[in-house]
Length: 472
Ligand SMILES: [Fe+2]
Ligand SMILES: [Fe+2]
Image (cartoon, rainbow, N blue to C red; front, side, top):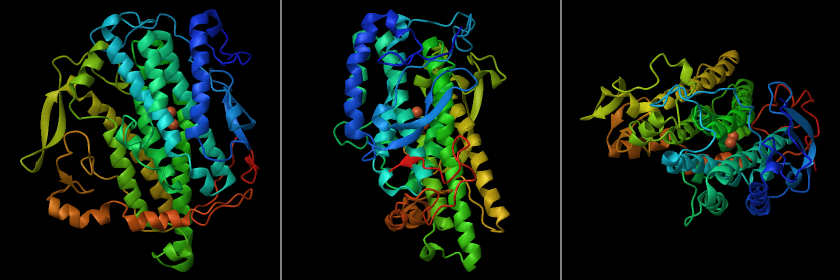
């Protein structure tokens, strides 16, 4: 079977859209609404410039992407699902072993729609959050990466809207419209999840967002990829391929920021690097603390009956379900989690099925720690004695068991009075943010970089770093 995507239709797709005229017409009437949303809420400026973008041309393992200069509004957003697996079975929950579903069972309709809407809502939200960043890009290379991420988040919205239109009838179409009506930070119609209503007002925040918050996306998509609802599983599988680049932008971007900071620290033999136009290490640590903690909230409460129901029903699993050495049903199993009880940390036994959110969060934390090790190697290699760390998972939480408590980045439980005194050491202050914003001067000469970031080690798709990634 061919993996190829049909680009001759108005909506590029590999789901044989032409064979379902009603669905095709419904999506073709949503398409101009998406275009309006992109024009009004997407990147500000640069819409008439040619950007060196990759487009999916095939969903197979090899060579799925094609690179060329295109204008943003001409990007071919479409519907691409990974190829079906013959005789796919449900791998977890009460229905484990039964055939995966090609249609939504009536009893799970509401829950599945909710899961798809929550995922779908994050995709356009991040585009809205990042819409002004083009004006302060540290290089053309970075500017191109921003737009690549933006168009792909737009495509992820398409991926979820397709499922809503194809499988949820009238309600699905209404939800698809609502995805364009909520906006990040809108006081009346905000996006569903907190982190997606925060401002991404500078490039340092953007790089941390792509490292920490796009990585939440990786884990959510990974858990939905396990779903018994096969079209959702296949959609998420392909989205994960695009997501990898987003996290690369964050991981490599922060490495470059740290490299530049080290260069200046060594050149002037000082920790006080702000006067030289680079970000000091304590500020980087505070940004890590902020972005990590708001991203942890996205996994939901540590104990959750909703998550338990989704798991038993086979709607949403854990990340790479087959790597868990248990029965994948979890009925009657216990799992230990840490909780604050009477002011001290205690390990508490909970029914395993109620803590699947926490298991997903743990996989995420382990993955985040890998990037920290890589960033610390940059510090080591430059002879800098300081190390960056992930804060404790109870730190600065607005969701879940720890939200009523004040926990330091080291995991110490403190009073609200202490917290208020210490918080300027833990999280970026207004002054820190103003300093970071003051560094954000655009650099649009091919190959040149802003003062606060080192060049990347290589370009995109074997092009040199000084390539004209955006034709201004
Ligand atoms: Fe996405
Ligand atoms: Fe992403």
